Image 1 (cartoon, rainbow, N blue to C red):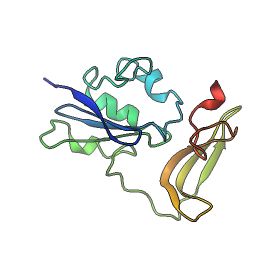
Image 2: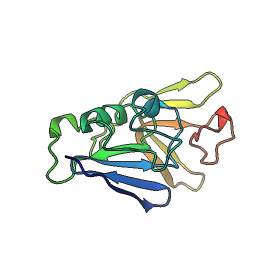
Image 3: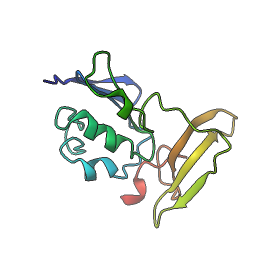
Image 4: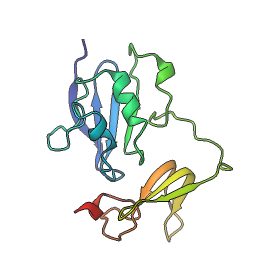
Length: 159
């Protein structure tokens, strides 16, 4: 039986949710609120509640499958020591240990109608000061100028 431990803030805007078989991390500053998580697994991802992730309300495998769909890397997972989850299924793009493809991979940028730019493929966002803001093979960038986390989308275009 899983025993969910209370969620806790681990850094500015980042939260950790854990039980015996899975650790889920959520970075509020990276989240574009695209809804892929709560639309596909609403018994676990409930944005109107606190805590909003109910890690014990689905199997770790179901949660891993949904986190692997997160377009922004806002949701990540790892298996804690002693987890009963097959480690072979915990190697997708949502894993904290995911190995990025080479930088020669083609980058694709999809424009969402009245929404953000969805970047797929290894990319690096560099600030005007030359600092790396994010390096990932998936991210969502603001196209409307309303985001409080620019250049990243925070879902402000939907309000």
